[in-house]
Image (cartoon, rainbow, N blue to C red; front, side, top):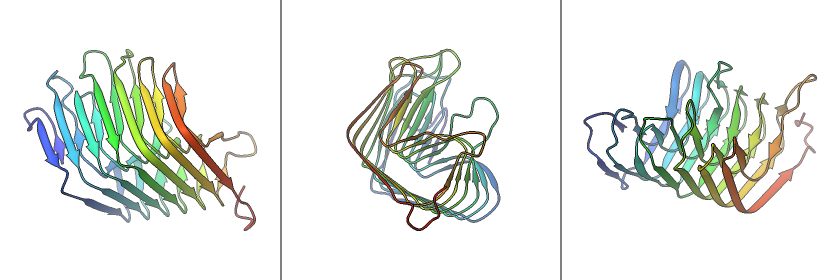
Length: 239
């Protein structure tokens, strides 16, 4: 469901599940859950949705988001478990301002004179990557981001994050848990699990960092209670 100015402020779809598959074509954002964009209002939204699932077999997208997205909209968001499966295609964009390619959980962002606070909670994330090209960050959990003139008050929470990589080309960092950017913005994950058995990370001239837990940028805060990392190159598909 897409919520813009004039939409209902209490969107309870907690009994509904989604299942989206992209086979080909070019789209801006592929979002498994709800989308909220009422940047000119300080009104508070309550957004709920059940389990969400996104599969990408091909095509090109700027962002792939397993859960719900809030863009500059004051909201209290609840998303069920998220599932993402990528076997092909291109995700991300190298142009300025694009900070992530794949976000397994919820994605919330805001800047000065837009709606805050924003809180988003997921029941857990499950991301499987078998192929594809990723031009920006891959985040197994949720992402809280401020941009432009920074603001605080953005919070994401995931019970458990699971990121399994057996193929693909990764041009930026890989994060098993969640991430937060900007002072006063936080990501909390109870348990993060990252398993890598294949894929190409970086190139001969640049490296790709891998974080089993969470990541904090620009004075943000990321917390993971327990983090597990498995790297197995025995099938010789890991570079």
